[in-house]
Amino acid sequence: MAKRQEYTCVSYVRMPDGSRVLFSELTEETKQSVREKIVENVGRVIGNYLSAHPEEIEPFSRCEGVRLIPDTQERGTA
Image (cartoon, rainbow, N blue to C red; front, top):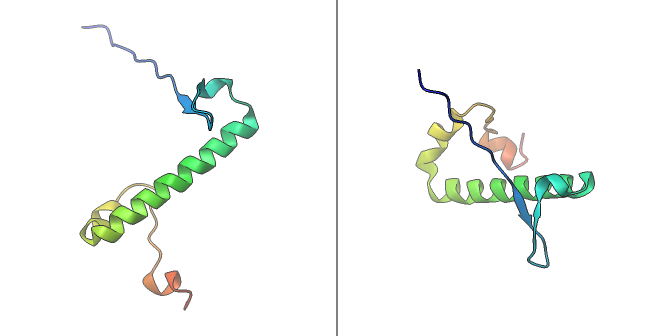
């Protein structure tokens, strides 16, 4: 049986000045800030995509951890 190949992932964050810093070297506060920005960006990109491609909403909703908010609640009428 062949030996299982393992991969190593190294994550960098581009700082406002353009430099790259290893994620593992950031302070906990900066890591939290980076995580929040990532979540915000992913949410915005997915929202834009689904607005342009509403036919993808149903297949996307089958992903684990995805919860769809009924249309009436989104408008604040619930």
